[in-house]
Image (tube, rainbow, N blue to C red; front, side):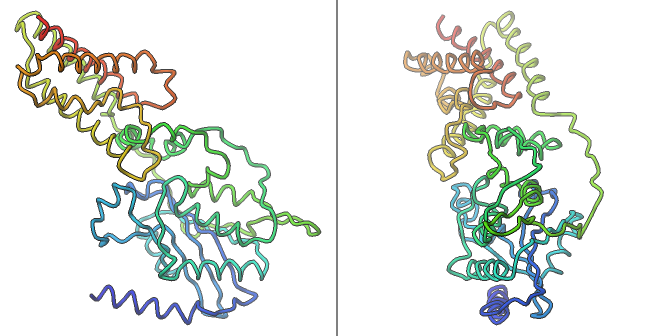
Length: 390
Protein backbone atom coordinates (compact mmCIF):
# COMPACT_ATOMS: atom_id res chain seq x y z
CA UNK A 1 0.00 0.00 0.00
CA UNK A 2 2.83 2.39 0.85
CA UNK A 3 4.40 1.71 -2.55
CA UNK A 4 1.15 2.64 -4.29
CA UNK A 5 0.83 5.87 -2.27
CA UNK A 6 4.46 6.75 -2.99
CA UNK A 7 4.00 6.09 -6.71
CA UNK A 8 0.83 8.20 -6.90
CA UNK A 9 2.46 11.01 -4.95
CA UNK A 10 5.48 10.97 -7.21
CA UNK A 11 3.31 11.02 -10.31
CA UNK A 12 1.31 13.97 -8.97
CA UNK A 13 4.57 15.81 -8.44
CA UNK A 14 5.50 15.17 -12.06
CA UNK A 15 2.25 16.58 -13.45
CA UNK A 16 2.98 20.20 -12.58
CA UNK A 17 6.65 19.65 -13.35
CA UNK A 18 6.10 18.27 -16.85
CA UNK A 19 2.43 18.72 -17.75
CA UNK A 20 2.36 22.04 -19.63
CA UNK A 21 5.96 23.17 -19.09
CA UNK A 22 7.78 25.04 -21.81
CA UNK A 23 11.45 24.26 -21.86
CA UNK A 24 13.85 27.16 -21.60
CA UNK A 25 16.45 27.98 -24.24
CA UNK A 26 19.09 26.44 -22.00
CA UNK A 27 17.37 23.05 -21.75
CA UNK A 28 19.39 20.01 -22.75
CA UNK A 29 18.22 16.56 -23.83
CA UNK A 30 20.72 13.71 -23.79
CA UNK A 31 21.05 10.04 -24.53
CA UNK A 32 22.45 8.09 -21.58
CA UNK A 33 24.20 4.79 -22.30
CA UNK A 34 25.02 2.44 -19.45
CA UNK A 35 27.58 -0.34 -19.42
CA UNK A 36 26.76 -4.02 -19.00
CA UNK A 37 25.88 -5.37 -15.57
CA UNK A 38 26.30 -8.71 -13.82
CA UNK A 39 22.65 -9.79 -13.99
CA UNK A 40 21.25 -11.42 -17.13
CA UNK A 41 18.73 -8.62 -17.74
CA UNK A 42 21.57 -6.05 -17.63
CA UNK A 43 24.11 -8.05 -19.63
CA UNK A 44 23.55 -6.06 -22.82
CA UNK A 45 23.63 -2.56 -21.31
CA UNK A 46 20.92 0.05 -21.02
CA UNK A 47 19.73 3.30 -22.61
CA UNK A 48 17.73 6.21 -21.16
CA UNK A 49 16.89 9.86 -21.91
CA UNK A 50 17.92 12.76 -19.69
CA UNK A 51 16.07 16.09 -19.74
CA UNK A 52 17.91 18.90 -17.92
CA UNK A 53 16.48 22.40 -17.62
CA UNK A 54 17.84 24.38 -14.68
CA UNK A 55 15.48 27.27 -15.31
CA UNK A 56 12.52 24.96 -14.71
CA UNK A 57 14.20 22.87 -11.99
CA UNK A 58 14.06 19.77 -14.19
CA UNK A 59 16.77 17.12 -14.22
CA UNK A 60 15.05 13.82 -14.83
CA UNK A 61 15.77 10.54 -16.56
CA UNK A 62 13.13 8.76 -18.62
CA UNK A 63 13.61 5.01 -18.70
CA UNK A 64 11.78 2.67 -21.08
CA UNK A 65 13.37 -0.48 -19.66
CA UNK A 66 11.48 -1.03 -16.41
CA UNK A 67 8.94 -3.61 -15.30
CA UNK A 68 7.05 -4.38 -12.11
CA UNK A 69 8.06 -7.57 -10.27
CA UNK A 70 4.72 -7.37 -8.44
CA UNK A 71 2.77 -7.91 -11.66
CA UNK A 72 0.27 -10.79 -11.15
CA UNK A 73 1.57 -14.01 -12.73
CA UNK A 74 4.88 -12.25 -13.42
CA UNK A 75 6.92 -15.29 -14.46
CA UNK A 76 4.15 -16.77 -16.58
CA UNK A 77 3.69 -13.48 -18.43
CA UNK A 78 7.44 -13.16 -18.87
CA UNK A 79 7.66 -16.68 -20.33
CA UNK A 80 4.67 -16.08 -22.62
CA UNK A 81 6.05 -12.78 -23.90
CA UNK A 82 3.09 -10.91 -22.44
CA UNK A 83 4.93 -9.02 -19.69
CA UNK A 84 4.43 -5.30 -20.15
CA UNK A 85 7.39 -3.00 -19.75
CA UNK A 86 6.88 0.68 -19.00
CA UNK A 87 8.35 4.13 -19.24
CA UNK A 88 9.36 5.25 -15.76
CA UNK A 89 10.81 8.52 -14.51
CA UNK A 90 13.36 9.27 -11.83
CA UNK A 91 15.68 12.07 -10.83
CA UNK A 92 19.06 12.16 -12.52
CA UNK A 93 20.95 11.91 -9.22
CA UNK A 94 19.01 8.84 -8.18
CA UNK A 95 19.60 7.24 -11.57
CA UNK A 96 23.34 7.95 -11.48
CA UNK A 97 23.71 6.73 -7.89
CA UNK A 98 22.21 3.39 -8.87
CA UNK A 99 24.84 2.88 -11.56
CA UNK A 100 27.60 4.14 -9.27
CA UNK A 101 26.63 1.51 -6.71
CA UNK A 102 26.67 -1.17 -9.42
CA UNK A 103 30.02 0.13 -10.73
CA UNK A 104 28.69 0.49 -14.25
CA UNK A 105 30.02 3.20 -16.53
CA UNK A 106 27.60 5.77 -17.95
CA UNK A 107 28.11 8.02 -21.01
CA UNK A 108 26.07 11.06 -21.95
CA UNK A 109 25.50 12.35 -25.49
CA UNK A 110 23.87 15.77 -25.58
CA UNK A 111 21.61 15.95 -28.63
CA UNK A 112 22.10 18.84 -31.02
CA UNK A 113 18.47 19.94 -31.25
CA UNK A 114 16.90 23.30 -31.91
CA UNK A 115 14.33 24.69 -29.51
CA UNK A 116 11.35 23.46 -31.53
CA UNK A 117 12.77 19.92 -31.64
CA UNK A 118 13.59 19.93 -27.92
CA UNK A 119 10.06 20.93 -27.05
CA UNK A 120 8.51 18.43 -29.45
CA UNK A 121 10.68 15.61 -28.11
CA UNK A 122 9.97 16.57 -24.49
CA UNK A 123 6.23 16.77 -25.11
CA UNK A 124 6.29 13.35 -26.81
CA UNK A 125 8.14 11.79 -23.88
CA UNK A 126 5.73 13.31 -21.37
CA UNK A 127 2.82 12.02 -23.44
CA UNK A 128 4.44 8.58 -23.39
CA UNK A 129 4.76 8.71 -19.61
CA UNK A 130 1.02 9.10 -19.01
CA UNK A 131 -0.58 6.08 -17.28
CA UNK A 132 -2.57 5.12 -20.37
CA UNK A 133 0.51 5.27 -22.63
CA UNK A 134 3.52 4.19 -20.61
CA UNK A 135 3.08 0.40 -20.92
CA UNK A 136 4.22 -1.56 -23.95
CA UNK A 137 4.90 -5.18 -24.87
CA UNK A 138 8.64 -5.64 -24.78
CA UNK A 139 10.53 -7.26 -27.66
CA UNK A 140 14.25 -7.81 -27.10
CA UNK A 141 15.25 -7.12 -30.71
CA UNK A 142 12.61 -4.73 -32.02
CA UNK A 143 10.97 -2.86 -29.15
CA UNK A 144 13.14 -2.23 -26.10
CA UNK A 145 14.74 0.54 -24.06
CA UNK A 146 17.08 1.49 -26.93
CA UNK A 147 14.77 1.20 -29.94
CA UNK A 148 12.06 3.26 -28.20
CA UNK A 149 14.55 6.10 -27.76
CA UNK A 150 15.75 5.79 -31.35
CA UNK A 151 12.20 6.00 -32.67
CA UNK A 152 10.98 8.88 -30.52
CA UNK A 153 14.07 10.96 -31.32
CA UNK A 154 13.72 10.31 -35.04
CA UNK A 155 10.02 11.23 -35.03
CA UNK A 156 10.69 14.62 -33.48
CA UNK A 157 13.64 15.79 -35.56
CA UNK A 158 12.99 18.22 -38.38
CA UNK A 159 15.13 16.67 -41.10
CA UNK A 160 16.57 13.41 -42.40
CA UNK A 161 18.96 11.25 -40.40
CA UNK A 162 21.95 9.64 -42.10
CA UNK A 163 25.25 8.17 -40.95
CA UNK A 164 28.81 9.00 -41.97
CA UNK A 165 32.17 7.40 -41.24
CA UNK A 166 30.46 4.32 -39.84
CA UNK A 167 31.71 0.85 -40.65
CA UNK A 168 28.64 -1.31 -40.76
CA UNK A 169 28.94 -4.82 -39.42
CA UNK A 170 27.38 -7.52 -41.55
CA UNK A 171 26.33 -10.04 -38.96
CA UNK A 172 23.24 -11.58 -37.45
CA UNK A 173 21.27 -10.61 -34.36
CA UNK A 174 22.71 -13.71 -32.70
CA UNK A 175 26.28 -12.65 -33.45
CA UNK A 176 25.61 -9.22 -31.98
CA UNK A 177 24.41 -10.62 -28.67
CA UNK A 178 27.32 -13.08 -28.64
CA UNK A 179 29.62 -10.05 -28.27
CA UNK A 180 28.28 -9.67 -24.73
CA UNK A 181 28.39 -13.35 -23.78
CA UNK A 182 32.08 -14.19 -24.13
CA UNK A 183 32.49 -14.76 -20.39
CA UNK A 184 29.12 -16.41 -19.83
CA UNK A 185 29.27 -19.59 -21.98
CA UNK A 186 26.35 -21.20 -20.15
CA UNK A 187 24.14 -18.19 -20.83
CA UNK A 188 25.36 -18.07 -24.43
CA UNK A 189 24.68 -21.72 -25.19
CA UNK A 190 21.43 -21.72 -23.23
CA UNK A 191 20.06 -18.82 -25.24
CA UNK A 192 21.29 -20.38 -28.47
CA UNK A 193 19.21 -23.46 -27.68
CA UNK A 194 16.05 -21.39 -27.24
CA UNK A 195 16.43 -18.73 -29.95
CA UNK A 196 15.23 -19.88 -33.35
CA UNK A 197 16.09 -19.41 -36.98
CA UNK A 198 15.09 -15.73 -37.24
CA UNK A 199 17.82 -14.78 -34.75
CA UNK A 200 20.29 -15.58 -37.52
CA UNK A 201 18.85 -12.91 -39.82
CA UNK A 202 21.31 -10.15 -40.70
CA UNK A 203 20.70 -7.00 -38.65
CA UNK A 204 20.87 -3.81 -40.74
CA UNK A 205 22.09 -0.49 -39.32
CA UNK A 206 18.69 0.45 -37.95
CA UNK A 207 18.17 -2.91 -36.26
CA UNK A 208 21.65 -2.95 -34.77
CA UNK A 209 20.49 -0.16 -32.48
CA UNK A 210 18.54 -2.64 -30.36
CA UNK A 211 21.79 -2.74 -28.38
CA UNK A 212 22.51 0.40 -26.31
CA UNK A 213 26.20 0.47 -27.30
CA UNK A 214 25.27 0.51 -30.97
CA UNK A 215 22.61 3.16 -30.43
CA UNK A 216 25.35 5.31 -28.88
CA UNK A 217 27.69 4.50 -31.77
CA UNK A 218 25.19 5.38 -34.49
CA UNK A 219 23.92 8.51 -32.75
CA UNK A 220 27.54 9.66 -32.52
CA UNK A 221 27.91 9.29 -36.30
CA UNK A 222 24.46 10.61 -37.28
CA UNK A 223 23.93 13.83 -39.18
CA UNK A 224 20.70 15.75 -39.73
CA UNK A 225 20.01 17.04 -43.22
CA UNK A 226 17.25 19.46 -44.18
CA UNK A 227 16.77 21.20 -47.49
CA UNK A 228 17.86 24.82 -47.32
CA UNK A 229 19.84 24.34 -44.09
CA UNK A 230 23.35 23.27 -43.23
CA UNK A 231 23.83 19.73 -42.06
CA UNK A 232 24.45 19.26 -38.36
CA UNK A 233 25.56 16.44 -36.13
CA UNK A 234 22.86 14.73 -34.10
CA UNK A 235 25.16 14.73 -31.06
CA UNK A 236 26.59 18.04 -29.86
CA UNK A 237 28.87 16.66 -27.17
CA UNK A 238 29.72 13.31 -25.59
CA UNK A 239 31.16 12.92 -22.10
CA UNK A 240 31.57 10.18 -19.49
CA UNK A 241 29.47 10.59 -16.36
CA UNK A 242 30.80 7.50 -14.61
CA UNK A 243 33.78 5.47 -15.67
CA UNK A 244 34.89 2.21 -14.14
CA UNK A 245 37.72 0.03 -15.33
CA UNK A 246 36.31 -3.22 -16.64
CA UNK A 247 38.34 -6.11 -15.34
CA UNK A 248 38.82 -8.89 -17.84
CA UNK A 249 37.06 -11.93 -16.50
CA UNK A 250 38.60 -15.37 -16.53
CA UNK A 251 36.83 -17.65 -18.95
CA UNK A 252 35.08 -20.57 -17.30
CA UNK A 253 37.15 -23.73 -17.59
CA UNK A 254 34.15 -26.05 -17.59
CA UNK A 255 32.22 -24.87 -20.62
CA UNK A 256 29.07 -26.65 -21.83
CA UNK A 257 30.98 -28.00 -24.84
CA UNK A 258 33.75 -29.48 -22.70
CA UNK A 259 31.23 -30.96 -20.27
CA UNK A 260 29.29 -32.73 -23.02
CA UNK A 261 32.44 -34.13 -24.63
CA UNK A 262 33.29 -35.61 -21.22
CA UNK A 263 29.75 -36.98 -20.93
CA UNK A 264 30.06 -38.44 -24.45
CA UNK A 265 33.27 -40.20 -23.45
CA UNK A 266 31.69 -41.62 -20.30
CA UNK A 267 28.54 -42.62 -22.20
CA UNK A 268 30.58 -44.35 -24.92
CA UNK A 269 32.55 -46.37 -22.34
CA UNK A 270 29.29 -47.30 -20.60
CA UNK A 271 27.70 -48.42 -23.86
CA UNK A 272 30.78 -50.52 -24.71
CA UNK A 273 30.44 -52.20 -21.29
CA UNK A 274 26.73 -52.89 -21.93
CA UNK A 275 27.42 -54.43 -25.34
CA UNK A 276 30.46 -56.51 -24.51
CA UNK A 277 29.92 -57.49 -20.87
CA UNK A 278 26.42 -56.81 -19.59
CA UNK A 279 24.76 -57.80 -22.90
CA UNK A 280 21.82 -55.45 -22.30
CA UNK A 281 21.36 -51.70 -21.75
CA UNK A 282 21.02 -49.96 -18.41
CA UNK A 283 17.45 -48.79 -18.84
CA UNK A 284 17.56 -46.25 -16.01
CA UNK A 285 20.48 -44.44 -17.69
CA UNK A 286 18.46 -44.13 -20.87
CA UNK A 287 15.42 -42.94 -18.96
CA UNK A 288 17.35 -40.14 -17.23
CA UNK A 289 19.01 -39.02 -20.48
CA UNK A 290 15.81 -39.21 -22.55
CA UNK A 291 13.78 -37.40 -19.88
CA UNK A 292 16.19 -34.46 -19.72
CA UNK A 293 16.30 -34.16 -23.50
CA UNK A 294 12.50 -34.38 -23.80
CA UNK A 295 12.08 -31.56 -21.26
CA UNK A 296 14.31 -29.34 -23.39
CA UNK A 297 12.19 -30.32 -26.40
CA UNK A 298 8.95 -29.49 -24.60
CA UNK A 299 10.38 -26.08 -23.65
CA UNK A 300 11.29 -25.43 -27.29
CA UNK A 301 7.76 -26.40 -28.39
CA UNK A 302 6.24 -24.14 -25.74
CA UNK A 303 8.36 -21.15 -26.77
CA UNK A 304 7.72 -21.86 -30.45
CA UNK A 305 3.96 -22.35 -30.50
CA UNK A 306 2.51 -21.01 -27.27
CA UNK A 307 4.25 -17.68 -26.67
CA UNK A 308 4.51 -14.31 -28.40
CA UNK A 309 8.31 -14.49 -28.62
CA UNK A 310 8.80 -14.38 -32.37
CA UNK A 311 12.52 -15.13 -32.15
CA UNK A 312 11.94 -18.51 -30.47
CA UNK A 313 9.96 -19.94 -33.41
CA UNK A 314 11.34 -22.21 -36.16
CA UNK A 315 14.00 -23.75 -33.93
CA UNK A 316 16.10 -26.49 -35.55
CA UNK A 317 17.16 -27.76 -32.13
CA UNK A 318 13.88 -29.67 -32.17
CA UNK A 319 15.65 -32.16 -34.47
CA UNK A 320 17.57 -33.55 -31.50
CA UNK A 321 15.61 -32.28 -28.47
CA UNK A 322 12.57 -34.27 -29.54
CA UNK A 323 9.59 -34.23 -27.15
CA UNK A 324 8.91 -37.85 -28.20
CA UNK A 325 11.85 -38.85 -26.03
CA UNK A 326 9.34 -38.40 -23.23
CA UNK A 327 7.66 -41.67 -24.26
CA UNK A 328 10.96 -43.53 -24.27
CA UNK A 329 11.73 -42.17 -20.81
CA UNK A 330 8.49 -43.17 -19.08
CA UNK A 331 6.84 -46.13 -20.80
CA UNK A 332 7.44 -49.67 -19.46
CA UNK A 333 10.04 -51.73 -21.33
CA UNK A 334 7.38 -54.10 -22.71
CA UNK A 335 5.57 -51.19 -24.40
CA UNK A 336 8.86 -49.88 -25.76
CA UNK A 337 9.12 -53.09 -27.75
CA UNK A 338 5.86 -52.39 -29.59
CA UNK A 339 6.06 -51.70 -33.30
CA UNK A 340 4.70 -48.17 -32.85
CA UNK A 341 7.44 -47.22 -30.38
CA UNK A 342 10.08 -48.83 -32.58
CA UNK A 343 8.96 -46.54 -35.38
CA UNK A 344 9.14 -43.51 -33.07
CA UNK A 345 12.66 -44.47 -32.01
CA UNK A 346 13.69 -45.00 -35.62
CA UNK A 347 12.34 -41.59 -36.67
CA UNK A 348 14.16 -39.90 -33.77
CA UNK A 349 17.45 -41.48 -34.88
CA UNK A 350 16.90 -40.36 -38.47
CA UNK A 351 16.16 -36.80 -37.35
CA UNK A 352 19.34 -36.61 -35.25
CA UNK A 353 21.44 -38.12 -38.04
CA UNK A 354 20.10 -35.57 -40.54
CA UNK A 355 21.01 -32.80 -38.10
CA UNK A 356 24.63 -33.97 -37.96
CA UNK A 357 24.83 -34.46 -41.75
CA UNK A 358 23.40 -31.01 -42.37
CA UNK A 359 25.29 -29.30 -39.54
CA UNK A 360 27.01 -26.73 -41.79
CA UNK A 361 24.09 -26.02 -44.12
CA UNK A 362 21.28 -25.56 -41.60
CA UNK A 363 20.37 -21.82 -41.62
CA UNK A 364 20.57 -21.60 -37.84
CA UNK A 365 23.48 -21.50 -35.46
CA UNK A 366 23.50 -24.65 -33.33
CA UNK A 367 25.75 -24.41 -30.23
CA UNK A 368 28.85 -26.59 -30.36
CA UNK A 369 27.83 -28.39 -27.15
CA UNK A 370 24.99 -30.04 -29.10
CA UNK A 371 27.36 -32.03 -31.33
CA UNK A 372 28.71 -34.41 -28.63
CA UNK A 373 25.26 -34.60 -27.06
CA UNK A 374 23.67 -35.72 -30.33
CA UNK A 375 26.46 -38.27 -30.86
CA UNK A 376 25.71 -39.68 -27.40
CA UNK A 377 21.98 -39.80 -28.12
CA UNK A 378 22.58 -41.64 -31.40
CA UNK A 379 24.83 -44.16 -29.65
CA UNK A 380 22.32 -44.77 -26.85
CA UNK A 381 19.23 -44.91 -29.06
CA UNK A 382 21.03 -47.01 -31.68
CA UNK A 383 22.06 -49.67 -29.20
CA UNK A 384 18.64 -49.63 -27.54
CA UNK A 385 16.94 -50.00 -30.93
CA UNK A 386 19.11 -53.00 -31.82
CA UNK A 387 18.44 -54.54 -28.38
CA UNK A 388 14.63 -54.35 -28.58
CA UNK A 389 14.71 -55.75 -32.12
CA UNK A 390 16.46 -58.96 -31.10
